[in-house]
Amino acid sequence: MTCPHTPRSAAAATSVAAALLLAACSAPAGTTAAQDDGGPAVVTSAYPLQWVSERVAGDAARVSSALPPGSDVHEAELAPSQALALSDADLVVTLPGLQAGVDAALSSTPPERVVDVTGAAAVVDDDLHFWMDPLRLAAVGDEVAEGLAAADPDGADGYRARADALRADLAALDEQYARVLAPCRGAVLVTSHEAFGYLADRYGLEQVGISGLDPSVEPTPARLRAATAAVQDSGVRTVYFETEATDAVASALAAALGTGTAVLDPMETSPAEGGDLLATAQENLAALEAGLAC
Ligand SMILES: [Zn+2]
Image (spheres, rainbow, N blue to C red):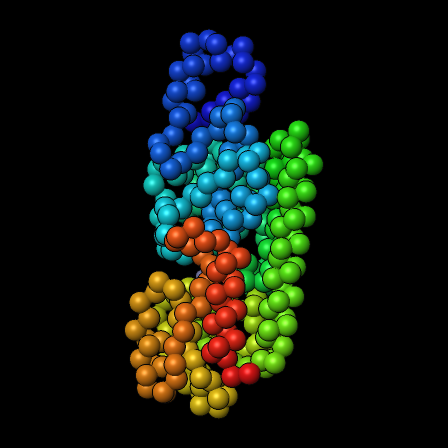
């Protein structure tokens, strides 16, 4: 169903038919349907895209996630109401390939505008975890600002100014990472979920992932051998776990090899307790500084 996107044509909304149509568009709690107050409705397909969109939107647009809170971006399935929120959105911000349910919903019922961040994020090969690189995330912020400016030209200056402020925060984060991790150049980063390739590339680390890009896929014997060799040959002191994963394999590996363990958050789900992506990035940096062989 297509909902009216510009009820600024208030005359139309006065008709009974239009009122009924608007009523039919009001989505259940937790989803978003296009409405006239609060600015454009923006729906995003993963937490990093939600966070960037919220920063760029300020209070000029309403940003929500297509995924249930706390769900695994690789595995989540969309409820019908969430698929409807995507098709009703004024703007969808997404990275195709990351979330199969979102991809399916967008191809079956295309929304009015889609910002595909693939180009801005400069994703490489099959690794979509671009948000681990602060400067790629800043470029996505600029792309979101242009999408919002097209959807809501009156707010264009504000969107671009907030994207600039976001870029400044992320550039400062990048400088801090570069400074703190400079002594660790060449260190091996053993992770359960291979979500840290962009971080490793930017700051001169070598990532060895135990479970691969998709953490739900069981590690192969070859991956386990590679991780074991990395630990034994490179003085690795820490095997890093994903926040919420039940990491039996990684924890068994750490125990067998006598390394410590620590949490490294792939920043794929919104933090509990009101944190944000910058705060999580700071926790990750502290864990890297403490656990890498530098
Ligand atoms: Zn991931």
